[in-house]
Every structure is written in C-alpha cells, then in structure tokens.
Image 1 (cartoon, rainbow, N blue to C red):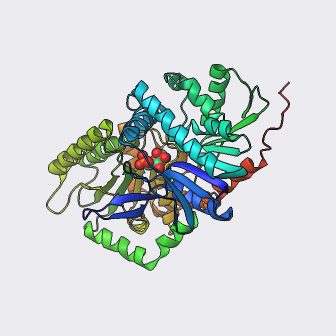
Image 2: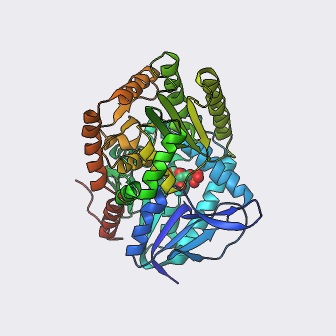
Image 3: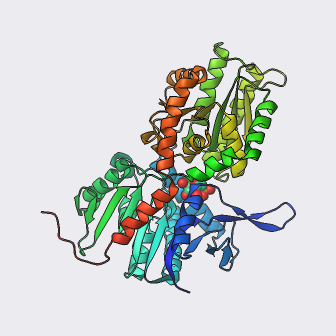
Length: 472
Ligand code: F6P
C-alpha cells in the first residue's frame, strides 16, 4: 500500500527486546522523537514509519502498534558495528557535539553508513504514494534525502536534524563532508534546532559545494531551491502537566522524598549516559560544595539517573566506569549510614516515574557540554505545576535559547557551576516562582504539536520542481 506520509528514522517508536526468559516483547523507545511524530502521523490519516527495531539480523514483517503502521528494517551485525556504533556514534556524534570526544574516521564505517542509508531510501521509495511526503530524521540518515530524490523525484522530502550542526571549522574535518552536504540537499526543507546550526549549514554549502545561497535558501543548478531553517523541538507540555497533577504521581513524589530521608533539597540529573551530558563535572561540583561545608548530607542529596545508552561503543563504556568510580569515591568520602551524597541509578524509567522524580526534585541540573535541545529541561518545567523548583541549565543546550530564566551555567566552569547550584539551593520562593512562571509560559505556548505543525506547514508549501528565480 502506498502512503501519503512516510517517516524515516533510525529507530522505530518501539524496540524489540528479548527478556531473560528468551521471550521477545515490544517496548516503547525512549526519547522525544516518538511523542513528536505520533500526532503528525495521526493527522495525516495514518502514515507509515520506517526504522530499525533494535537487535540484529531478524527480518520482521510490517505491523501495527496503537494504530501506527510500522515497517521494521533489519540490520546485520556488520551494519550495526559500522553504521550505528561506528559512523553514527563514534564519528558524527562527537564531531557534531563540539568534538567533546575525539571523532574516529574509518573508511569501512563510511561504507556501511552509505549502504544502510541506501536501504532506508529504497524502502521509503517503495512505501511512498505518488507526490507523497517523506520526513527523514536525524544524523544517522543524512544521505537518504538525495538517494530518495534520485529514486522518486515526484516526492516532497523534509529532513530534521535532532542534534547540533557544527561550525565549519569542525565539520570540515570530515573526509566525506561534501557527500553529507549533498545528501542533505536532496531535501526540500532541512530543519535544525537553532538558527546558528542552519547558518552553519548554509555557509558550508556555499563554501564547500559552491552553490549560490541567500539567507536561508540554497539555489541548486537544477533549479530547485532548498530551505534550511530552525524549528526548535519541544515536548507534550499539556500531557506532562496532566501527569504531574495526577494523584498517583503526587503520591509517588512524596514517597520518593521520604525514601531519600526528606532532605531539605533534592538535586536531580536525568541523562542518557553520554559524555556530552557533563555528568562527571556536575557531580564533582556538587561534591565540592559538600566538601567545602556549603552543603551537608542532612540538607541535600543528588539523585543522578543515568539511562544506559550505546553500551557497545568504547567511549560510553569508559564513561560509565569513570562516573561510577567517582560516585563511589564521593559517597565513600562524604556519605553517612543511610545518607549517601549521591543516589545513583543506572536505568531508565517510564514517563510517570519521571514525572514523580521531577515533582520531587527542588533543583534540576542539566549541564551538557553541547546538546541539540535537551527535552529533560523542558519536561521538568512542564511538571512544576506549583511554579516552584529551580532549573540549572547549561548555556550550551539548545533549550537555553528559550528557557532564559533558568540559572544558566558554563559546564566547563566548575566554580561557576558551584555558585549557581548554591544560589538555586538557597533561592527564595518568590524568586523561584518568578522564573518558573515565565519558563512555563514559554513551554505551554510552544509544544511539540506546534513544532511538528510548523515544519509540516512549511514543507507542504514547497512546490516541487518549479524553477525559482535566482537572487540578483
Ligand atoms: O536525538 C539523538 C538520538 O540519537 C536520536 O536519534 C535517538 O533516538 C536517541 O538520541 C537515542 O539514541 P540511540 O538511538 O542511539 O539509542
């Protein structure tokens, strides 16, 4: 069957998980992408979603999940190693995140990346109706737009990058920089989190590919025009707010505070266990405040949830060891019986437990070295229905552009972070309410539906294959 809307993402909204019993079940994939795309698919009378189902090898048939049509793509062991763990997560991920870790460049990884992108493009070409719309997502699939256009020039193609797009000085390290730029230019509309990222892209296209550009437009020699612009992503604000107000979440938040010994203040970090997130530095800053006598384990505890992620990639394994060693040392030095300084959990939680944690926490600490947006910061704000709680936020997270009333910090500056944590710890209720009210207004006005609608409206306005006049 042909579909008017096809979503192409590296992952499906559900993940195939094998239980210890050997039984396999489908589990909702974490992340904002799923919540963001679902409403778009529903308003388009049911599109189809193409993506990897996790795991290796097995060829799975298309199926329905809660009214969505899903098309699982199989990946071989070599493809997972080369495309997913290698080129996507050990080359592009660190390169696009300010080279926080050193990107590795391997020709075999690139070959797997090309091969997987080609297979995804072929599947999208097969599923899309004539003159239909295909929306491709994220850094794992940057070649798909051009590959798809070659197969199906009748389609309207959108691309959205969920992570940062780096400045030219970093991007040009990539041996395949031109292929990536040309791959993306297969789209009619390319969405980024921030205007700076869109600007980086357009500048690179002008310098490296030689196309004419004007503001956010790129003019291709075949007469097509490509637009590159910012569409900052958001969350289901009303959904989180409703959850945070629900009786079971309020009750659970109380239980969590009690389980932690009812300290005066609870600090909270929730991140995928990723070196871009700045977990190590933030825990050090907190522990130094305790060591210096500004905080005490009777007053404060830091709950750090580290969601397991990309565990086969070496940098992620090393990071886990580093963080767990640090937590052990801090608790060994500063904790007392029944009163750890840091309550550390290496796990993921369902949405209602997250909402309870957000409600229980007085200070939310989000300190990435670089982050496309960071939805955790927005979720915390949506859950603070009493206009209380403090957000300490890295100025290098995309969310800092909108959440200006947070305590903004430079995560490389440990003393600056210590000062902000202390200020947030001691802030008066009036000051907290002033800041939180403003941030809540921002989040409620700009939710994920508004994000998806603005991208889709722009994409639908594209008139494929018309010759646009070149700028004077
Ligand atoms: O937003 C970045 C991103 O890589 C998404 O594409 C992805 O769904 C999420 O983070 C989780 O990462 P992974 O799919 O590697 O587990």
